[in-house]
Length: 141
Image (cartoon, rainbow, N blue to C red; front, side):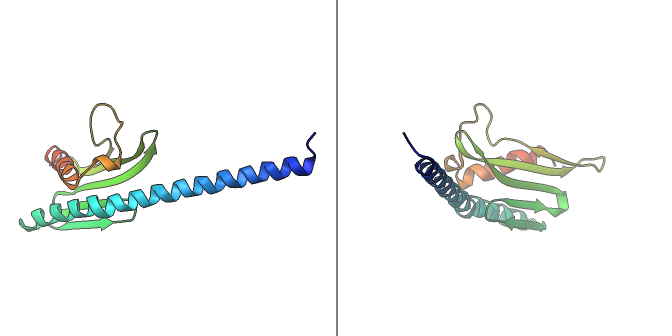
């Protein structure tokens, strides 16, 4: 028969092990997200910025470690990318902000692809981000 000291020792060791493993998984996910924004999103936003600047448009880019946004000031249009953790892995989440003809500011949060949502940030290239931006920009301005 197990005594209380042995029981509690095993219980708290197991709890500490789970906490450590959870922290390691979290750090791995954060590293994956940072890499996505650095290697995919930032180059895509820089390319978008360069294209708009050829037409003398004011572009503001904010790149964080786990999110990013690009604003076309003259057109009052904002395209942001966030992430969420799903059963499939880390997914990019676009957030579109724009001003209507009536002057109301609207925000839409959506998906990067239609159909099943079983993709992750690993499935996206710079070109995919640019194409999604074009689709959303062309339907709003």
